[in-house]
Image 1 (cartoon, rainbow, N blue to C red):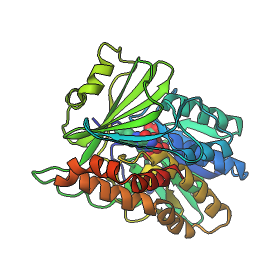
Image 2: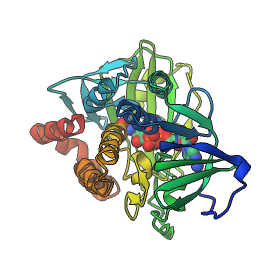
Image 3: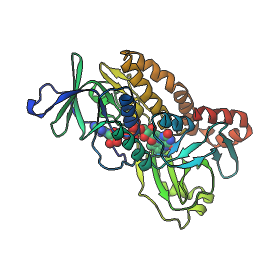
Length: 371
Ligand SMILES: Cc1cc2nc3c(=O)[nH]c(=O)nc-3n(C[C@H](O)[C@H](O)[C@H](O)COP(=O)(O)OP(=O)(O)OC[C@H]3O[C@@H](n4cnc5c(N)ncnc54)[C@H](O)[C@@H]3O)c2cc1C
């Protein structure tokens, strides 16, 4: 079910000199997802020469709820990136009997197809002179003031800095020793995964709806005039169809709607790390560590990290980045860890009633996601 980045490869010593790209760039970005592209745009805006290495060609799609929070919309605008999307006014929690909803007090969020987000970021990166190479990094070497990436096809590229933006199952994290040992999977496997699919139907709401089904959370994000994204989060092995069927009101809305994309999955969502920096290699976005998609903040946090990491490099203070990362992700790590624990506990059925009974608290939480 997972979609990217098998954890393979080793740090290598010697390479064939004829396969080494002679130009040493300032920054190599490994992974051309949204956060890699945002980091590359930031780097170019500071005048750094930048190379993005990404194995997938064309416009990249990915399993995502596609809610781009207000803070992320602002970060994108500051980069000169303006994707088209559907205005999202807030968030609604529902469980069939109770509903809690909060509308953002400031700017709106956007429901944006990942393909559209990728198009907008890739166009801006190309406009600023970011260089692109197709390939998969599977070895990294650091020596003196430089770091080099070797691709599966044997080509090697060298830079002063490398950003690992290669997603949840980051190979860079593994190659530079920042991965933690995988947890032993117990009989009662609590690891969580996500699956998303789009349907041709006119949005019936201007909110992101989160339906708390008995065994999964079902997210509805309007992304177009006649398209909604459905993302389901749950424990390994859950069924997308069964999760939808367990929310009768939703099943009714989607009855007869044509799928507008095929189902895509990602996970396990929880990814711990030893840190975010090893010498001249820094981790950004999901590669830097992730808890869960339950609060829909990955893009907002990753964009803030992409800005911070380039500021640290430009100031020649790479050691400051890990502190910045902890600051940027602190609330996310606390809230998301707590919410996932509640979702996996007998408290699960009390989450929506509590949110409905405590609208100020629910509102404060939603506003914290919007920042
Ligand atoms: C089901 C689900 C729902 C979500 N909902 C939301 C939401 O509503 N809002 C939100 O903000 N966030 C959401 N997220 C989180 C969001 O999708 C991620 O935080 C975001 O995609 C992170 O971007 P990234 O660029 O770090 O990683 P990715 O988007 O995964 O990009 C990584 C890139 O690295 C490339 N790569 C991998 N390995 C290598 C290699 N060895 N060499 C070179 N390149 C490589 C991959 O091909 C890929 O293009 C959701 C996530 C899931 C799974």
